[in-house]
Figure 1: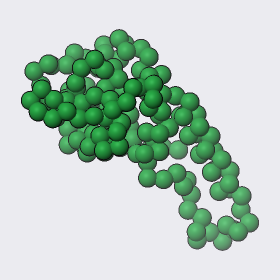
Figure 2 (figure 1 turned 180 degrees about the vertical axis):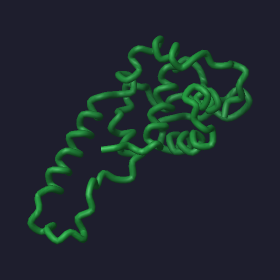
Figure 3 (figure 1 turned 90 degrees about the vertical axis):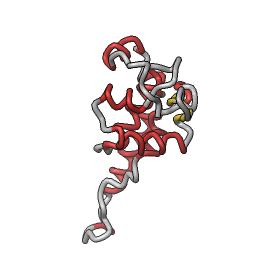
Figure 4 (figure 1 turned 90 degrees about the horizontal axis):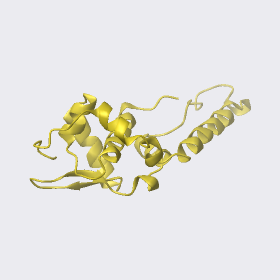
Length: 146
């Protein structure tokens, strides 16, 4: 299974906000930390904000923060939200579909994959916050927020 770049970016945004949970963070800061286009991140952040994973504070001193405590954000929930679907194969035109059990096995594997992700929260993924901060680099506090 391969997750989309959109999901990757969403998880990176949430990880960054968890690492710097004591302050507001700008999209520009996240963009520079991961070398990702701000335009791509804006779309992801708007979606995460609309669904409550992120809170956006507007204005000169605004920025982003988590919409809920990191202990309450399950990785499986984020992946379910950001991925369009988990149908691994399209059996609609396959000759052997009526007799094939492959879809059942693939569906079981998908459920197991998501169950494992449900066992982790954002807090689990960001437990080494000081290491994350070091790897993400020092932000420029004079950056405009969002």
